[in-house]
Amino acid sequence: MSELVTGEAVTLELRPAKLPSRALAVLLDLVVVGVVYTAVTIVLVISTASLDEAAQFALSIAAFILVLVGAPIAVETLTHGRSLGKMACGLRVVRDDGGPIRFRHALVRGAVGVAEILMTFGVVACIASLVSARGRRLGDVFAGTLVVRERVPVGQTAFVPPPPPWLSGRFAALDLSAVPDGLWLAVRQYLTRMRQLDPQVGWAMAERLASDMAARTGTPAPPDVPPAAYLAAVLQERQVREARRAFGGGTAISGPGEHGGHGAFRDPAPQRPTAVPAAPYPPVVPVAEAAPQDQAGGRPSSGGFAPPA
Image (cartoon, rainbow, N blue to C red; front, side):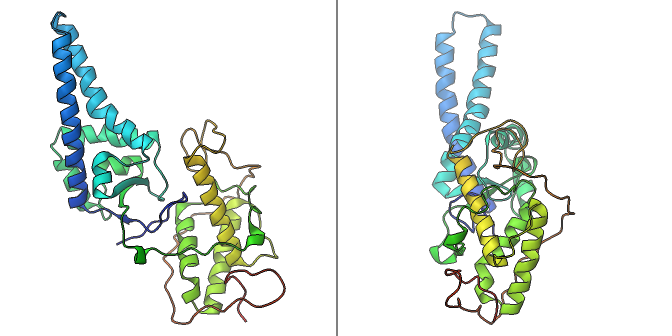
């Protein structure tokens, strides 16, 4: 069962939803949409009785598109991936990297869903979910999204240590547009488990990830900042930007942004990143020994980011 890293400041370590819970959520959504569509159809039949057949047919097609296609798209966009059925089942639609979806993701999911759910009675969607390793239907594949479980046991969520206070806001001008999702996932997995690693192994892994992060951003890592603290500060900066983007606290621009698409938010003072070939970042494997404690004196407390003795 794979875990995800979310880009916004919300619950982390969400897990892909299984087919039974997704099918129940879709069934609840179809019941609600069907009731609304029936009520709208009755109102249209009564109010358009005096019109000719062509006008009535055009209005029925418009009602079908607006209610059965447009309404679910609008609900998922406004709720950031939570329809009525998904809220009842504790599910949510997110991007592949765990971030909140936007209108273009909901539009692709809704358009493909007409063919694979409504026209085939869900047969194509069920087959695609069973074949996919993460239970994704065709709409999720084309939109780059994933349905995850929101309600998970509290003890199963991993804690990401915050960066030292003296690093707060230091990387506000860093360009994060070229950092791939695999590197974000590797950074977060390292930060959540670095206290379980051998000090030397953990330090070497942090240096490798910090070097990859610096190559992607086009700005070298500060020599006076420990690699683990640098990674934590950059990850926190990304979460702040995603939270600002999700709640409208930034300036929108047209064109490709950090995640591509329209309406993205440009990082302040962006720099052109160096082209580096993408590389897979496997999950961090915990080791039995614990990480060293902070050393007294010198720079303010680094929260477990001090170099090994």
